[in-house]
Image (cartoon, rainbow, N blue to C red; front, side):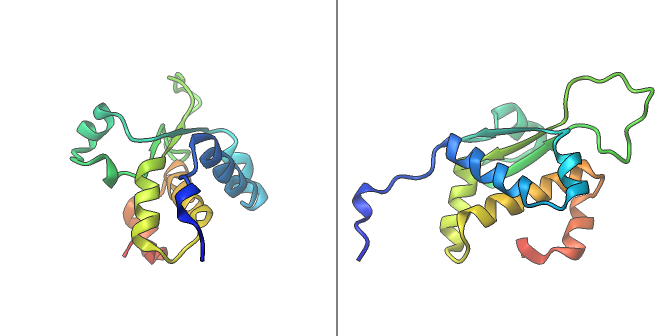
Length: 135
């Protein structure tokens, strides 16, 4: 029997390592595009992010893409900064515990790929058509 008293949840650095592994597992063309996006790991989304998205609980947001999707970028655009994919550790841990049926690294990778799809210009509806994961 596992002694659960000494176990702790993965910290932000470990989450980042798991996300980096997921990026390295992407097929090459997607890997290159993913390298153009900054990856940020935080415990929770900021209050400003939650307010903008009209989300009440920080546990409801596991990831967020901030930027201009590749399908909308123009050479005429003035860059406002790099595109960013945010992964929110505590929200992901909560979903992982609730699901109880997948490895944590798979869930982190799935959230990362979902947000990367937004970078490629996919909407949530587009993603849901081919990915029943969130049902």
